[in-house]
Length: 177
Length: 270
Image 1 (spheres, helix red, strand yellow):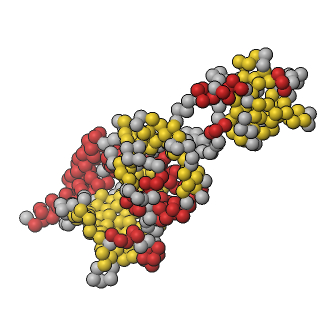
Image 2: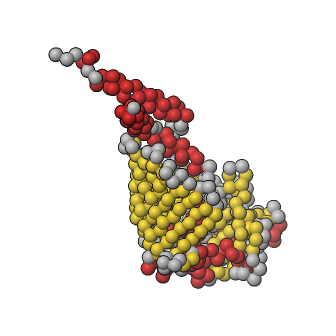
Image 3: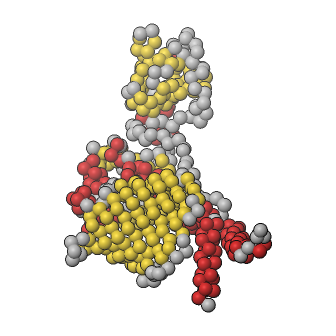
């Protein structure tokens, strides 16, 4: 009986892996792009490469309402059904944001797992410092914990007005959407 | 010798193959419903002339048909300055152009820029009511045609109303302060896009805080900003491009729709 179960799960795992491998990642990405267009967000100029279990995106420029908002050197989209992640590296924000925030972000990672189905986790590291955020899909809330860098603390005080000081000396921000 | 058909791996291999085919079939069905192309931003590289403030006092409406004839007719050197008539001028001193014609064929006008030649006379400079030409080292002044000057007010009906005729002055410090904390702009003024279908036609001023710096700039609630520095504001990008380049500009001209009339507001940045 146990042997049968194991065999069944082995076949299921193989099927899932095959499904992930054959998944039309480019088509899914184009679908996402079309969905984002409805919100006036366009990712342009990028090169795409299907790498089996992930989709690699290089040199994408993000336009919000036709305004160049950020450029991303490299981004990996991993969709493993149980665990999904977007990992972007070398992000440069548009010059128009220079009065709000330092422009370089080294890494931004969004992850979602079915084992924590109501939350999307976000981690970011950049010139601004480091931040961990949690998006609650059900309550539609965002909670951000920020450890601001010296550059951020000294040069961008206006942007930090919305943050509250936490007990551990960091900064927190909560918003409902 | 063991036959391949008798191997215990064959049924497993067959099952795996079937699962692979099944997975591929599902993804192919999925592919059928997914778009085959992504979205790219269509960059519009349209010509945008640089905004330059000119003295509109000197602007005379040019007769219809004057443009395009150019200085082609200015070939004869036997023409004297008295046989020429100055029909219009635009600009001042070493910048601008004049509209000239020969008295014998006054309807055949030519547009001459400073430095260009007409009938052997080179346009040297432009004064408020006259133009100075040089020929063979001598200087000649041609007065603006009297019929034109007397009828200028009735002839020239500007399409764009200038707010109060004089540019407003904006300090660079204020602009830098706004650039440093842009949220202060939105405390003083609220602007929303005006759309016709999918296309943005301008940006409507919905609110201006009283006694604020923004309130002194001549904008009124309900104004729709349609142009800035000769650039039609058809997207947020157009507006942001102007905003980003503000520190390099000496003057900003905006055109707003106010009570269905175009009104020009000019700001000089010092």
